[in-house]
Image (cartoon, rainbow, N blue to C red; front, side, top):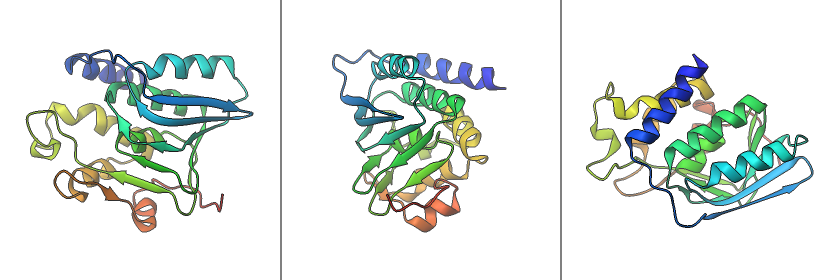
Length: 191
């Protein structure tokens, strides 16, 4: 099952003709047992992410500080599976703001912590031809994301919610109640 999910992610990335980004739009740093990430996930991000994981076996937590999202969904899903495989916690600190693909990455943590004052924003995705929600529920375009969210949360309900929650071309900021309802938030902490 796990290999099939990884295979689906790789096929999805290839099918989307992911183009290598000319620049890497994120910052990563290690402090003790924490890996801090800020910026945008691109197709170049996984290589550095994997190198930092390999070089720092003491890592226990991935802290997502300020992240606008991702330009490569396949990169996000692959990184997410590696976070889950390592049993790492994901955290958004007070004042942190993560959106779109960064929220998808956050789902990989076990557990997932959102400090008061943190912002998580979701939206429908667009493939250049239309909104993702315009595809029928059984369309192959949903397959990799549905499988990922189901694997991380035990249900794909959150994925379908994200397609409908935001206004057209806008962001929906998740409430604490929504985070709890969909299992996005697993631990409540004050820091």
